[in-house]
Image 1 (cartoon, rainbow, N blue to C red):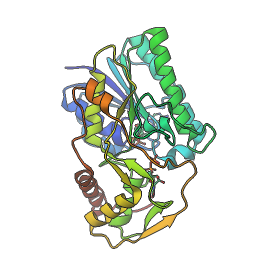
Image 2: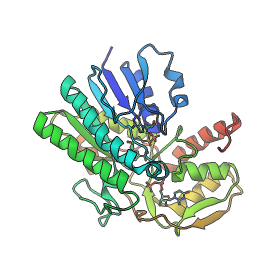
Image 3: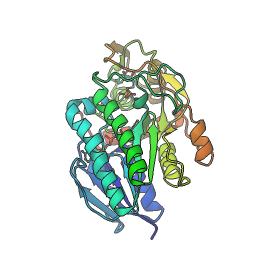
Length: 319
Ligand code: NAD
Ligand code: UDP
C-alpha cells in the first residue's frame, strides 16, 4: 500500500478523476463530499474497491482522520453554482481551508490547495505569471469565489510559515472533460450539450473574450507532480493549457465536431466576466519535471462530446 490520501470534493468533476488515478496507483483514497455539485455517479465505479472510501461530509465542519496527504478541492467551480449561495461559497473556501489545514497540522499531512486563475480576476497582464497579484473586484458577483480562494491561499501560506505545515498551491485554469455536470453552466458543458441537442449555442457578450482550456488528464498529472515536488517548493504554480481561444472559436469547434444544426445566439455578458485568460506555465515546466499539457482542444473536446453523447443515449434529460 502506498499512501492514505484524503480528497475533499472528490465526487466532483476533477476530484473523481483524481480519485481514480490515485487508486490506480495503489493508494488508499478517502473521498469526502457533500454532493452540492458532485455526484455519486462520478465515483460509483470505484465503490467496489476496498481501498476506496466515500464519506458524506461538509468541509465547513471539522473532520478527523489520519492521512498522509490531502487534496483540497471542495468548492463549487461554476459561476452559476458558486453564486447560488455566495455566503456558503465563502464559508466553503475559508472555513474548509481552516479545517483541512488544521487536520494537516495535527496529522503532519501534506496538503494541496486547488486554487484558481480567478485569483488574477480580469487580468491586466497577459499571459498571467504567478507573480501577478491580479485585478479582482472585491464586491462583485464573482468575489465570493475569487476572494474566498485568495483568502484560502493566504491561510495556506500562513499555516506554512507559522505552523510549518507542508503546503502546495496550484492555480488551475479552465479545465474540462468527461464528468463535468451537464447543467453546471460552464461554457464547455453548455456548448456541447446545446450542440448535441441542436439547441441555440449561447454566447455571452460578443464572444471575443478568451479562455485557455485544459483537459482534465493534464491537470491531474500536474496535481500529482506538484504533490510530489521538492519539499521547499510550495507554489503557487499555474496549471493550465496556454492555448487560448475565444468563445466564438470554441462554439464553432463544438458545432463542427458534433455536426450540429445549432445556431449561435448572443446573450448579455455577466458582470466582471474576465476578457482574457492565459497561463504562463514556465514555473510548472521548471519545477514539475517538464510538465506541460499533452491533450489539445480538438481531442479533448471529442472525448468530452463522447461522454455527453453517452449520457443522452442512457436517457439523460434536462431538469
Ligand atoms: P465541481 O463542482 O465538479 O467539484 C467540486 C466538488 O466539491 C463537488 O463534488 C461538490 O459537491 C464538492 N463540495 C462543494 N462544497 C462542498 C463542501 N462545503 N463540503 C464538501 N464538498 C463540497 O468542480 P470542479 O471543476 O471539479 O472543481 C474542483 C476544484 O478545482 C474546486 O475547488 C475549484 O474551485 C477548482 N478549480 C476548478 C477549475 C475548473 O476549470 N474546473 C478551475 C480552477 C479551479
Ligand atoms: N460563456 C458563454 N456561454 C455560456 C457559458 C459561458 O459565452 O453558455 C462564457 C462566459 O461568459 C465566460 C466564458 O464563457 O466568458 C467562460 O465561462 P465559464 O463559466 O466556463 O468559466 P469562467 O472562466 O468565466 O469562470
